[in-house]
Length: 151
Image (tube, helix red, strand yellow):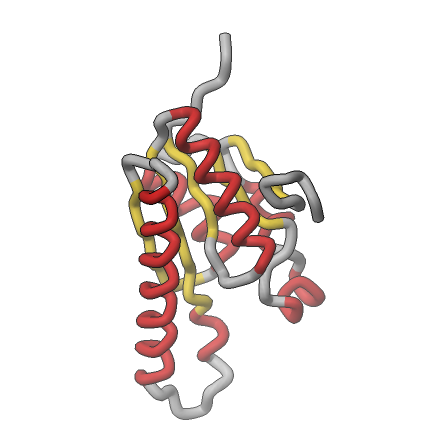
């Protein structure tokens, strides 16, 4: 019996690797007639370094993320994905992508770019993809190549 996925989560962080994962997730969602969950997590730890928190910084991050997610949604719709959900959360990207969003959205496949934008986090505490591979309770696919399987 062929594996069919019903709900596919793809994490969007603005990196070229995330875009590759997104485009492949669109294709997998179409083949499986699956829900495509487009998620972005605003890392609240990034704001802890500001001695006086400026709410407009978080608002700007939210607006920018929402606009990006809507652009990705439009692309997926044009490519023929019928069911698309946008999730914009605050917190630790690792935990949200590995545990909380998949549980809340009944995700059975997580698709991630091999590396994202946060090089500092990768150096000090390990990559998001590495954490998700270890902690997720569903299948995880790490994407390294584009739709033509080129780096």
